[in-house]
Amino acid sequence: MTSQGSRKAVVFFEVEILDAKTKDKLCFLDKVRPLHKYYPQWYAARQSIRLDPKGKSLKDEDVLQHLPVGTTATFYFRDLGAQISWVTVFLTEYGGPLLLYLMFYFRVPFIYAPKYDFTTSKHWVVHLACMCHSFHYLKRLLETLFVHRFSHGTMPLRNIFKNCTYYWGFAAWMAYYINHPLYTPPTIYGEQQVRIALIIFLFCQVGNFSIHIALRNLRPPGSKTRKIPYPTKNPFTWIFLLVSCPNYTYELGSWFGFTLMTQCLPVAFFTAVGFIQMTVWAKGKHRSYLKEFRDYPPLRSPILPFVL
Image (cartoon, rainbow, N blue to C red; front, side, top):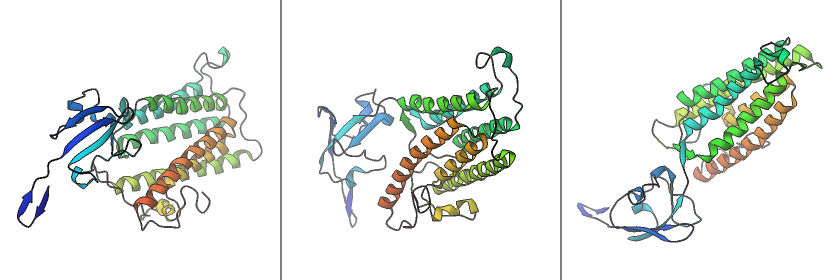
């Protein structure tokens, strides 16, 4: 609808929807009706509507009158596949490692030799590692329920299998060796190494939580508004001066501390793989900030200050 003075003119649009892959015509809309009214199997969450077959999906908040189309518009549809809520995915992928690790910690039957069933380790670092690991995933579960605000309500169903394989598999691999009856704790620097590692781990856990709270406060409930995150009065957020994604920076620091604490190769490998993946995410987020905000602070790096 356009207006000029007190007069208003109604603009009618005719919308043609084509399949993005085959270019076959799916429907022709001369009235405002959702696509899933024509194809019930394609509910709103699994729809991707684009101006170009290989272009980016239009946002939910995009308005037809503001798009570069005429009164007869052609859009391309792509099926995103079955969807599942982010909350469900996070609760599943984080709940699994918590329970799996505890199974190894309590040495339930059929994991180690029968004589070790339900025995406990003599090394205090093993108990400390269990507490740190459990704390980390309990924190993640609680943040999912009470802190995070998701810009998208769903994600492809297939992702839950990929994510769970990653988190559950690494948790079982780490737990097997850390809780193994033959596990030996750090010997080079001993207890001093474990204490330093614990400080690093706890510091970064608090920092990670602080960043999540700061990011939550940027987005009002039910809103998809994006803003530039800035440091708050909380000192843990001051890293925003140098890094675009400090939540990943603190996450990396937590797992570095856990690696130092346990001196376990599977933990080090998990930390390295996580660092690579978080770097990819951080670079993508950094690029989107630079593209969206002209006044974005130029001093910031994606994940590591002045380095990466």
